[in-house]
Length: 146
Image (cartoon, rainbow, N blue to C red; front, side):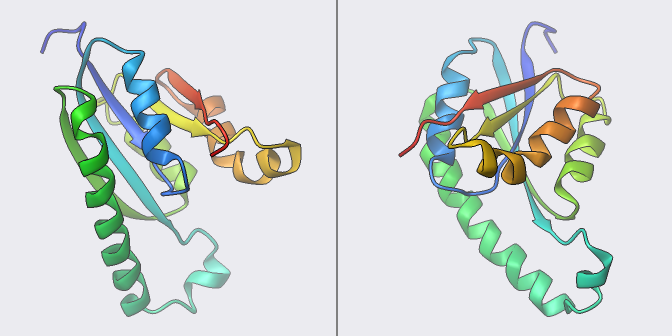
């Protein structure tokens, strides 16, 4: 691997504008070799997870799989990089940070909503945790309101 070529981890939540901010972020980078999209089914609270059956989790993963395939179709034309993906279950920040520690990625690229302080406080908490604890650089792409 040419070290000037980047392998980027891109956590997604399928919120409106996700495709747009990914394309925007990738358009600012000229040396992307591979991107790995990651969606985490958020079952981080043990109090909740004991009430969630395996069937519910599997159904959630199937829905996410369909959304992921649609997302990939939308971003394929943004560059000549390889696209992979993973659907995981757990605490989103922890899963993202665990992936960052594998040594497989040069950077994490995340979307930032930027729609207001209260929403940023609650929704941006995963991004803030990742920024503060990531062993690799984190590029935050400001989402523009749709």
